[in-house]
Amino acid sequence: MNKEVGLVSFPPNENRIDKPYSEDTAQRIDLEVRSLIDTAYDQTRELIQSKKDLVGKLAEALLVKEVIGAE
Figure 1: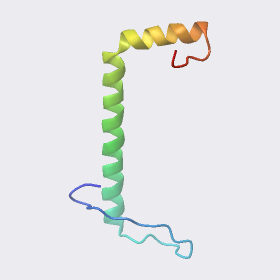
Figure 2 (figure 1 turned 60 degrees about the vertical axis):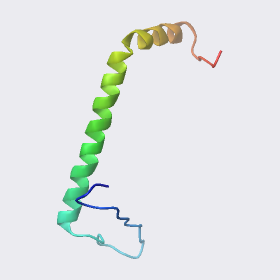
Figure 3 (figure 1 turned 90 degrees about the vertical axis):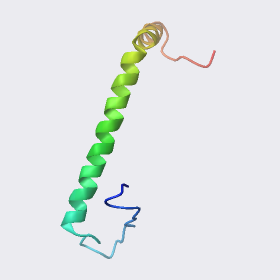
Figure 4 (figure 1 turned 45 degrees about the vertical axis):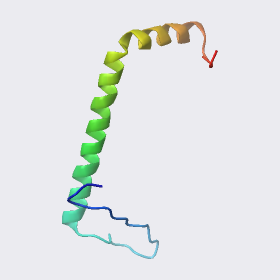
């Protein structure tokens, strides 16, 4: 995931009730996931803003025709 957590894997185990990692590790994982989501959201907003004219044209085309193919 990142340098602090490292490359780890916690495969699901149906026979186990508790987590195979500490609460501290769970918080670090949550923070890293939140960071990834925030970064992806920001990048998506920037992309949409930078392509605003194309997004508008696509929206107009979709109002006329429900499906737009490769043509």
